Each structure stands twice: as C-alpha cells, then as structure tokens.
Image (cartoon, rainbow, N blue to C red; front, side):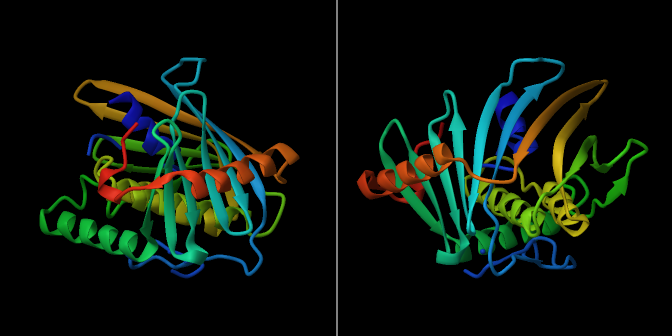
Length: 263
C-alpha cells in the first residue's frame, strides 16, 4: 500500500490500490470548478519531489519534474523505471520504460473521457463522499496551509510563492493530468480531492512546498508526505535530460497502452 499511497501524495505523477488544448481543467470530474487556463507562453522551471512515510528521513521515492514551454517531463530519480511526458499541446501523454525500452501514449481526449466515466460511476455507486467528490478546501490554522478532508482521509498543503507568472497554473495543470493518467492506469480510486486541491492552489497562485496525507482506518492513522523543492529555471543538465528523453522516444519500441509494463 505504501508505494501507491505515495503516488497520490505526490500527484503529482504518474490513493491507494486500484488536455487537446492548452486548457488543463478538472471540468470532466469537477464540472463546477473553473478551468485552469495556461498562459500563452508557458514558463520553464523545475521541481524536485521527495516522498516519505511517517517520520522517516530517507525518501521512499524521488522525482524530478521539468517544465519546459508547456511540456512536463516526470523523471524518476534512483530506482524508478517509468518516465512520463505530458504534452497537451500535442494532445498526448507518453510513457517510456527505461529498462524494457518501450514507449506508449494516450490521447488527452481519452484521459478526459476516462476521468468523466470514473466520476459518473462513482456518483452512480453512491461513492461521492467516500472518494472525495464533494470535498472542499479549507484554510488551516497553520501558516500558509490548506486542508481538504473526506472519509478518514486528509490532505494538508503548506504552500510557497512562485517566482514567475504561470508557474502555479502549470503545476496544477500537470497535477490534474497526472491524476487522470492514474485513473487510466487503474492506480487507485479516482483522486478527486487531490484534483480539487490542485485547482484551488492555482487560483491562489501558490505551489505546494509540502503535502501531507493522513489516512485513518479504525484506530490507526498512517501518514505520508511529499517535499517539493522549486527552482525557477532549468539548468544545462536539465536541458540535457530533456534531450535524452527525446532520444528515447525516437529509439524505444511502441506498445499498446494496455501492454505498457507497470513498475
């Protein structure tokens, strides 16, 4: 359960077990929300994310997110094998497996449709509350912190300011796409509350510095957290990494989305 829960804390990437335009929005799963409109010239920046369980000081997982002119590269650091490339301007999300040297893609239209179907199914099954469909963000007593809570699950986001216009919107759009991708890959139930939180932080023009997830089951509560280091520009090494991903896209064999290996 730990690894899957950490995915939801982060997504942030491609919780638990189970856009064709530059408008990345949660309208398919949360139609009452406002669209997250991307700026015409998207900023370039990086966010390094470390994921922890409880009070551990050694991260369970690390990811490097490179935002470059509207395309987001989600690169695992350490043992991870799957690279995700979110490219809404080309109406696609690509996955690359570094070990098996295969790639696949799914259209953004498909992701929107799958998310809408998941929302409809949750409503029909009477699971709106248990899946956080109607959860709303609240201001915490802690400085610069917001919470969203439902059915024994609570997210707490401590925020940080951005250095450039559009950064918060870009990050929120990525989060929504990553949540949609998780739905399509059957990684847990639909993370509706996480998408709501992303939309809210974009409206506040802030980034999450830390996201904490508390999951209460009976008398036991497990805690997970992500720590996000934001840098307002890409380095030469980051540019090299992006170029290497381009080489992988050209060289790796294409497989069906359903056949792409799971880490």
